[in-house]
Amino acid sequence: MLKVQTPNGDHKVLLHSCCAPCSSAIIECMLENGIRPTVFYCNPNIYPQAEYEIRKNEAIRFVTSKNLDFIDADYDYAHWLYSIKGLENEPERGGRCLKCFTLRLTETARYASEHGFSVFTTTLASSRWKSLEQINEAGHRAAALYPGILFWEQNWRKGGLQDRRNQLLKVYDFYNQQYCGCEFSMQRLEKNK
Image (cartoon, rainbow, N blue to C red; front, side):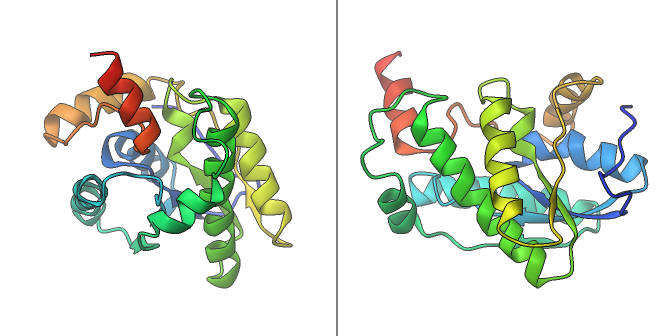
């Protein structure tokens, strides 16, 4: 398994989680490296709400199986939609994604600051469909808003984690979504069928 360490050596981290499949191998890796994550579920981009609930419940199922804490940041799709206004027609990896990442990771950094965490990271950096540059930019922007909070920039695609993710997907029989979550990526998926 991949050897990892937080930027400040802390063994407590707030992990922004996008879904159970992407979180599973990362959580396992952290635990094997002596890092105890608290899982923060902040995904107001997911559409429709029924899809959000399915993904959230799968994340809860996995996190509780590992005896970890799960924080639900609540679902505020209207706020997310307002935040990305004007970017609806952007392609994947475009301006809408950067805005979406920044919104979600800023909320993660705020929670970290208010609840005694010094470092946070995100499972978004495990997806081959997402831009690592955008994720890291959003994470550092978010951390800069809260003194004493660090963003842990980690490429979670490496070190065998993708293969392990796929194994855990089968072991836990996770629901495995076919689009990132927002209605605009869902529409593109439907068009390409």
